[in-house]
Every structure is written in structure tokens, then in C-alpha cells.
Image (cartoon, rainbow, N blue to C red):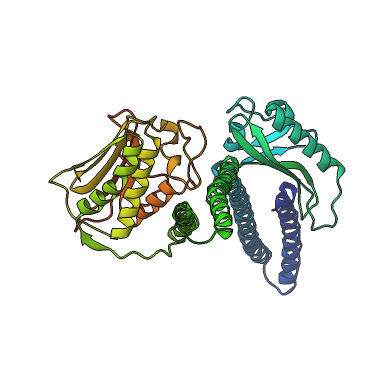
Length: 463
């Protein structure tokens, strides 16, 4: 872009050049006048001729200079406009890049905090602001460890100090400090701190702190630990009985005592329990991976449900629990795998009997709902708290036994039921029961109906 003095210089030069041309024309006119007079041309005529020629040359030069001057002015204005457009385009590009980066940071589920060399916050996205001592406040301009909860503030200060003191192993290595499982109110966070240094210019922009909410992963780890503990307990009891009774039988001859058949029966039943436990875990792994095979057919669900209820009548009677089956005539037929449907009903009825206290009642109702097939298993037990009615269908999650307050089973029964119902294209959820306990509801599409909306969603689904 031309400077103002560079734009004025051509006009000044043009004026100087024009006066020099006028002087040259006057001198030339004098020469022409003298030459014409010496050739015998009358003086007035010679003078007019010389002046006319001079004026013609002057006007021609003036016209040329004027055109040149105008062209220079137009070129200068065009250059100014083009330079201005380039500057505006560059500024717009920078603004768009900034907006894009800001939008990405605000959309992140992880908290991002940028801290300068003095420990003051220069930027914080919404996820990071939710983890502050006062959630939602604007922390910019404040010291990092003054706005974080106590435990996280201590870790953040240690990380910031460590970053200031550590040195990179090479130009491509970025120093990184990480702390895991930091409690923060009802959540657990992982904190990672890295230096923000430009790889192109080497300029130091401070430090970046990443806050990752790892509550879910830590909860899963806790559930897995509880699952392994429960499985170990479930395995230990039958294995202990099998080893004990087999040791007794080892020292006895067949028919030597009347307890021989009883010992054999105990070993057989404990072996079956172990087999069911292992089969249940293996079956869930197949369902979770999508490798389980289904042989769907058109069937009447009443026969399946009635058969399962009959199998539990003796177990319910031993605990003085009343169990009844109510069948509605409007219940439609459905397309399902008979064995898998029986597995779902067995898990739900078993849970109802397990958590119902003596002298309680369990009611199994089969009917129709929104032209679909509905199954309800209700009990008079302690029920399921509203906060657990979705997570209860997740793997490894176990409800507390109302008598012992210890997890019962492996925590895979309801998760397996949800996986099967999802493959059928249906829904399963938990709600309050009129009997005072919990009600587990299964809704499956009837013959000719499509999959229900929400089928396959995590945590069950319901109305």
C-alpha cells in the first residue's frame, strides 16, 4: 500500500515538468519566429505560426500529463481498496477461527482451564465452571486454587508447581502431570495439567488443566468389585459343600449308612447351582456381545408365564408367600424365543419372591397395553427407590436384601432380562406396586407390530 507522501509526489513532479515544458515551448516559438523571418515570412505570420505550434504542443503535453495523473490516482485508490479488503478478510478469518475454537471448548464435556504464569485463570469452559467451589461463577482473573474445592485445589496447585519445575525430555515432549480419583462433592474427577507452548514460535501461554468427570467409571469399578465378591461367595458355598460331602463319601462304602443318598443329593444340587451360575454369566456375555442365538416364533405367552409361576409355587410356600397368576383374555400373541421369554419371567419372579418378606404376596399379571403384550410382576416387598429404578437394570448392580443388607446373587439377572427384552423389540421398567413393593413391567410388540419406540435404550424404558 502506498504512503500518502508517495501518492503526492507524482503530482508535484507533474507540475514541475509542465512549467519546464512551457518554457521550452516559448524558446521554441522564438526560434521559429526568427527562422520564419529569415526565410522571408512576415513577422506577424511567423509569430502566429510559432505560437500556434507551441500551444498545440503544450496542450498535447498537458492532456497526456492529465491522463497519467488521473490513472495514477485511480490506481492508488484501487490499491487502497484492495488492501482494505485484504485486511477485512484476514480479520474475519481470525474471528471465525476464534469462534470455532470457543464453540468446541464450550461443547466439551470435560472441563478446560487455562492458567497464566502467575496461576491466574484466563479462560474456563462451562464444564470447568460446574466443578468450581461455587458452580457457575466466572473465575477469570482469579487464582486457580482459590476457586476450586479443597481436595482438587491442593492437587491443582501441586500440578502447577510441578509443571513450573519440570523440564521436557525433548522438543517434541510435552510435560504432563496427572492425578486420579479426586473427590469433588458427589463426583470424582481426574486432573491432567500440561504446558501450553507454541510449537512454532516457542511462546509460553501458561498451563492447561483438564478436568475429566470419571464418576461413572469409578462407579463401574466399584460394582465390578462387588460383583466379584458376590460371585466368590456364590461359588465358595457350593464348592465347600461339594468338597465336604465328597470327602465323607470317600471314606464310606455304598450302602454303609443311611445318609449316603442324602450326601449324593446335596452334591448333585450344589453342582447344579454352580452350573447355573456359570451358565448365567456366560449367557450374559453372549447377549452383551450380540452373539446369542434367538429362535423366534409366534406363541401364546400365557403358557410360558403359567409354567414359570408353577415352578415357584413350592419355594413361595416354604416362605409363606402367596403367589398368584392373573391372565387377561385380551392378551395378544407375540413373536419371541420361548426359552428366552421363560428366562425373563424366571428372573423377575425369582426377584419378587426373594425380596418379599414372609406372609407377603406376589402377583403376576399378563394382559394387553396399547395393543401390545404386557407382563407385570408385583410384590409386597420393600420396593426399589426411585433413584435406582434405572441403574437397577445395569450389569453388576445388586439390590440389598431387606433381611441381611447384603447383595444377593450376581447382579446380572435384570441386566440379562433387559438385553433379552431389547432383542424382542420391547421395553422393561420398574415402578411402584399397589401391593406396596416394586412392580417390574415388560411390554412387547404383538404379532405384526413394529419394535416399540425406545427399545434398546440403556437403563430400561417406560411410560
